[in-house]
Image (cartoon, rainbow, N blue to C red; front, side):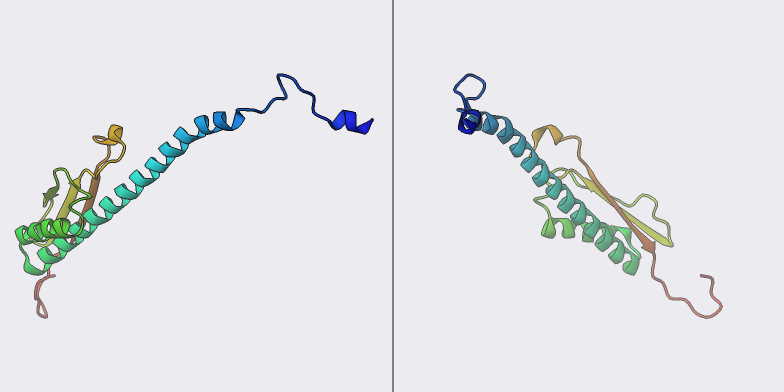
Length: 142
């Protein structure tokens, strides 16, 4: 008698045939989108790191030489050698805010995109700044 209760009965609601196919059809697109989003986020992170490295390199060269133009050239060279493929669009390197005593280098651009809908919405913008290196002597103004 116990076996009668545990034995599955044939019927519409107890039939599991085809459920695996349905699960795959529902989950596969979700998993693909999540995977592409993870790849896109990794590309955005790397592009941001390249932009920050370029800004720091440009600021360092400009601080030592005192010439913002040399800093911009150093930032362009950094982007071309280390991450040109990850910042494929127009890269803007700006020195707005630079004074005779302080250097400001801003690197901005758009990273490479895997998801086409995000192509124009994601931007990378990094700033590096620091004082211009100069020689002083005792009693000179800072």
